[in-house]
Image (cartoon, rainbow, N blue to C red; front, side, top):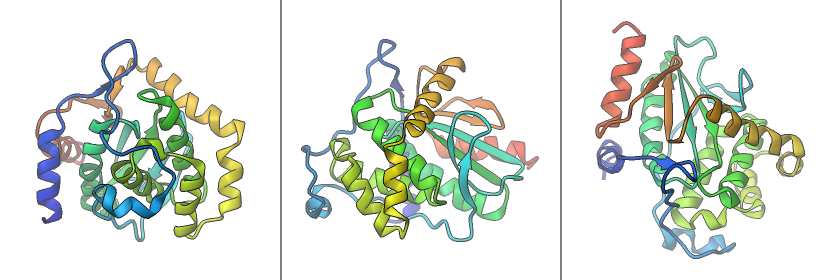
Length: 237
């Protein structure tokens, strides 16, 4: 299956959103039995297509609540996504965002900022959010986003545990001790909570929630077409 065909199939499934508890029904990723054994990963579920971030700037964005940013800080278009690693709709959107990074961020036209929210299933979403932030502190936040979604799709969100994340950090060539210190830091927990607070202030009641140059984007069945149209409108194309 080609990458674009994979994306097309995913787009057809992306109808709806995971709601804030009390405002709708949230459905966790539908995979896996709780386990800390990564040896069964290949057999447990799909591995998502790799996205190349070579030559793209990755950093932590603190212009508001913490975000994992990729792309030129001076890019004319900024896409902000509030995403929960336990939300299947966010999972479905993931390869579409990857394609936008390749199509636009790689050419200096787009900066993507992922705000890792954790209200769908906080027991698992919150550690995943911390992992993304802590890898982002070492310049590989989006590489960790890939790793988290692969863990979620193959082992399920029950596997969002510090030990498993540390293994992925080692695979990415990052400082595991620095990651561990960040992961258990009260400051990181406060950063993750701040994303929830910011989302509530913006009136967000479900994810994925997308903004292009601060303009909210209404998700439709053909998400990639909608996002491409919004980005190109901002580029004046």
